[in-house]
Image 1 (cartoon, rainbow over the protein chains, first blue to last red):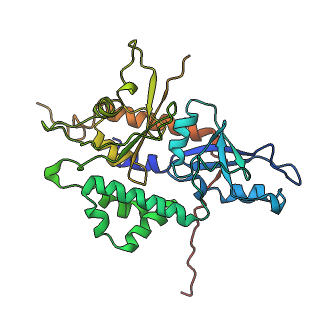
Image 2 (cartoon, each protein chain N blue to C red):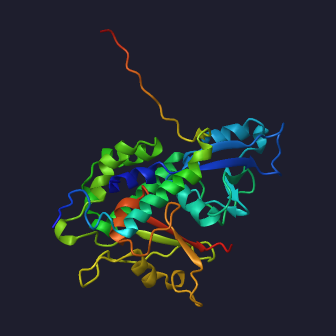
Image 3 (cartoon, chains in turn orange, purple):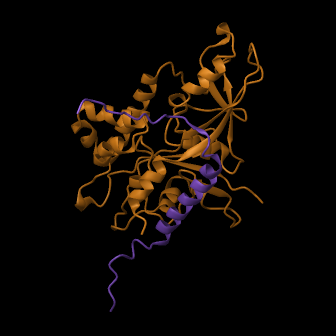
Length: 275
Length: 52
C-alpha cells in the first residue's frame, strides 16, 4: 500500500530534463554548446544554474557578461517562481527536454526581479514561508521557531536534503486536532492566458457545515472560469507538480502533501491541448 | 463481516489513487529517458576518516 508520505518524496524529487542554449545574438569567442541538466521542480532557476552560467561564460568575452536570465519561447522566466510551476504554466504538453534560452544582455526589467546573490532567493523563500504560516497558523509556528530552524529549511532546499527540510517543515504542516485543518489555505492560482500574475484569496479548508472543501470548491469560488466551460467541454487543465489532481481532492490534503517548499500550493490553469 | 486491516475507505479513495498513479506516470515521462543527465544539485558525500 502506498503511503501518503511517499507523495512528499515524489514531490521533492521531481526533475525536469532541460536543455539550455545561448541566445543567438550573444557575442561569443567560440561556439557555445548546449548544456543539459536535470532541474529540481521545487527549486528556483537562479539557485540551481551555477553550472549553466559557468559553461556559457567560458565562451564569452568578459565584457559581454552581465546578469544571467532565462527565457522560454519569448517569455522571460521568473526566477522567484518555483521551476515546476514555470514548466507547468509555460511548457506542459511540450516535448522534453525543456528548451530554455540563456541571456546575458538586455535584462527585461519590467518582467523579472534582479537576483544578484543567493541571499535574495533566501529572502524571497523565507518571506513566502512566513506569509503561508500567517495564513495557516496566524504566524504562531514560524515565530516560535528558532533562527537555526529557519536556516535549516533554507539549507534543506538549497542542498536538496529532503530529511533535513522535512524535520522542520512538518511543524508548519501541523494543526490542532479539533480544527481539522489550517485556518486558511496558502495557495496561488496562475493562468498563462491572463496578464494578472496570480489569484490569491482567503479560503478555508473546511466548510461552515464541517465538510472538507475540495480543489473543485476552491476553483468554483476563486476562479470559476477554470472549471465552468461555456459549451460543456472542459477546456482547461488544472496542474500541480505536473499532474492533474481530481477536483474531488480535499484541499487540506493537497496543502499538506503537494505544497512547494515555500508552503504555497501553486496551481497552474492552462489550455487543454486539442488532439 | 470481514475485517480489513490494511485498507480503509479513505485510502482507497479515487482521488488518492489517481494522484499516486499520475505521479508515477510523471516520473516515467520526465525522468525515464533522461537519467543520464547531470543533476543540477550535486549530492556531496562526506567520508569520515580517522585512526581506529
